Length: 254
Length: 305
Ligand SMILES: Nc1ncnc2c1ncn2[C@@H]1O[C@H](COP(=O)(O)OP(=O)(O)O)[C@@H](O)[C@H]1O
Ligand SMILES: [Mg+2]
Image 1 (tube, helix red, strand yellow):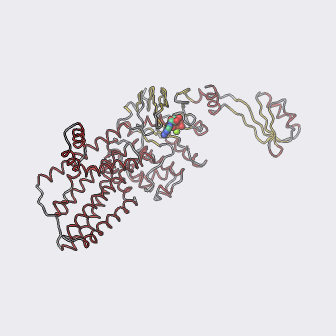
Image 2 (image 1 turned 180 degrees about the vertical axis):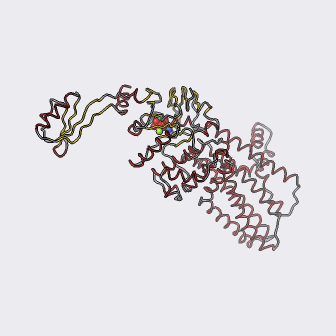
Image 3 (image 1 turned 45 degrees about the vertical axis):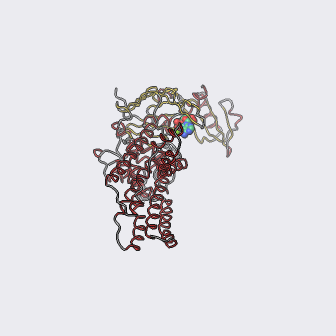
């Protein structure tokens, strides 16, 4: 009940942010731009549209999560709205969870809007409703959850600019960590290789949520992998939120 | 005896700056608030009033010390349900209207508290915001935000209200209105803890006060005990007598319009002055006996340390 009230209030606040609509506009431009890109290429045009569209969804959604998420908690502390809120009979974890869920709701709406543009564009090319694209979008949403949690975590102790840089690094490294694996395999054994291997295991692997290639190229994905990715995403999100609560509970609001 | 609030030996050190420098802000604060009284927490700017109140409301964790609210640990939800807090220079979600904001606040309490919507209207008219109930808070002036802050502190009808500089940012009429609300709360049996650096606001309404300076309480007790009731001097404003003639009675000061302000320190000289004025057919404009104020006490204490 208390968490729901905070989440809805957060949603009301986040949905008013103009940056959100700017990013939505850019996402739409990118999705539609893929149509032009497709014209210039030989081969399967629809595949390019799908590929660019899903990448835009992932990137711009993550950017929304980062820009809004890193501001949310910080703004409450900076503008002192948190004083009257936290002196009421609520636990600090309820506050943080409410903020998180409010942002997730906002991102859900944004995802629906972006998906509609994307799916309509695909429909005009294939004239069939491709439900398997929804599976790809589902995993992109799980990725949003994780990125949002990371943004909220950083905003518990850092300014929006710094938090944004950290969170964006998390997103980019998360998508490149498979490259790290290739690198490790090519390295000769030694201390460097061990260090990189440790790093590799601690970094998130956001490619777990990337089913673009499989779905675009109609390669079957084993059900086990779907379940693994979902559990991986939810577990990682839970872990990051726990860390955020742990930090937030100890904070002084000077 | 049950206390509404008991703080024992609160210590707090802030680490501030890029290269953290320690600053002791609270150095062993202890005081108790008795149920049903208005307790004034006084001190100059930067003394540590806000820090103390934030410790009490769980926004800051003291390094050392103990806080009880109606006999319960101050961080427990039961304790927090019993208090309402008005922060200093309050600021709230500016995209909400006053009515929406209070509705949001009401949702943060357990169901058993049962805050009904008439309560919101009742509060809005109590603090004088009924006409602007549907205006977004972004369009509120500082004084109006202060009133909205009052309303949110009272939303769940708490047993104790904690007000940090409640009359700050208000015009004289606003100060009077909110002071009346505070007195009314006391009449309803509520406990009030308020902080201020403006003494006139407080001395009229407080039962007991504590004076804090540089993180330490240097004096506390009932107002009658702290302030002597004896007359310090009497001020007479008169016209028609030359100031030079008055030096025998006290300190004359020329003011505008040919008037003279005379400060008399001995009570028996007042009659002599009045007789003189009468014989000259001069005029008395005012006669005010000055007793010791909290301000005098305050200035005295600050000077002595
Ligand atoms: N945000 C802050 N940054 C730096 N110093 C602070 C901050 N808040 C409080 N302080 C320090 O703590 C001391 C006590 O402040 P405060 O409790 O706000 O005093 P008061 O409310 O009595 O005016 C001040 O001397 C100030 O130096
Ligand atoms: Mg203060």
